[in-house]
Length: 434
Ligand SMILES: [Ca+2]
Ligand SMILES: [Ca+2]
Image 1 (tube, rainbow, N blue to C red):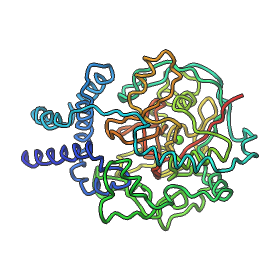
Image 2 (tube, protein in one colour):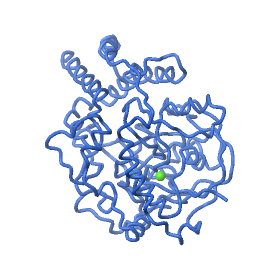
Image 3 (cartoon, helix red, strand yellow):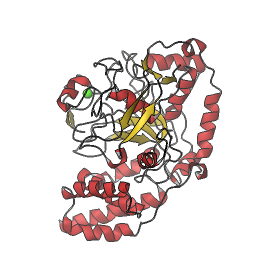
Image 4 (cartoon, rainbow, N blue to C red):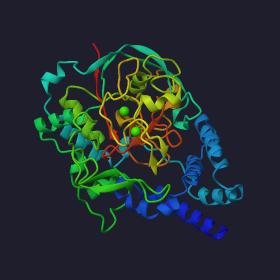
């Protein structure tokens, strides 16, 4: 038994180190990860080990952020990894110890990013939509404390810092299938999930070749209830897209008012341009979610027991059994739950929402140190995926669970690569105020 655990650990860290150097695991080729799912099965081991691994990669352990990571890691480890295995882990992981944070401009992926942005700039703006604030609400100017303010907060949510937000307009709901269909019909736009996968782009993102035998046909990530507890729950399904949320054979019948999903960040930006809008910054999103309340964990306040009736998320044993106490197993029509004090629906749950900003896990520390907390991230950095360009998503989804990710907290940060479509990710737009 002990032998097996040691072997699993060895394989686990071997994969981790491989991932660090080659970044061979990402959404596009995640089937490899799925093949190793028996090793990744132990989520508590995985979470504790990931944090320790990340900490060692950082090496410079003297700053506040690293200390928070250590504290968080030890908390996770306490309930996950046998103390006797700790020296063994350090020995292996120390071999991967080195710092990694590079400027965006140096990244080979930026070639593809610029290509996408160039394509988006050619999309005509719909002047009728651009000239109206229909379906939007005014978010008044103000200051707020951004960042983690509950025991569930993760290291990237610290330190809390004060932000000043200018007034702006925000969509009251996530963008719906009906709205997105209008955009596609008007412009002929084809979403990223409906396009062939480009091996050169995968190489730019991961540093590795697309493994032989991997199809490049259009595909997207669909949630599947695994056949055994804690196995992996994402499946890359050919043909899955915003028109076919669960893959081939599924469609949008009766889902006009559901949020559009399987939209990559570029698709969201393309829609926003057409509508004469833009994506919210991460700070704008959190300010709006808090709805003018102070130190509230959720858009409606602090009581988690209210969440079952306040948002579409996962009740029950994730990912095996969704009790559907809120009435929805996957997406819900927008406006199914009560709005926050600004009149915004589904800021918590339903689908994750793309923000404009790159994800940099150390950004709050940089902001706190800067004289101006209105700065925006000019780097991306995620120690779990060093070198992987990722954009921020906020608000959690129908898959978030109280015991697993609590992504529907106001302060919770998440990230995803900008060319990735997922069944639980959508967006809403904002418009600069006047
Ligand atoms: Ca639900
Ligand atoms: Ca949402």
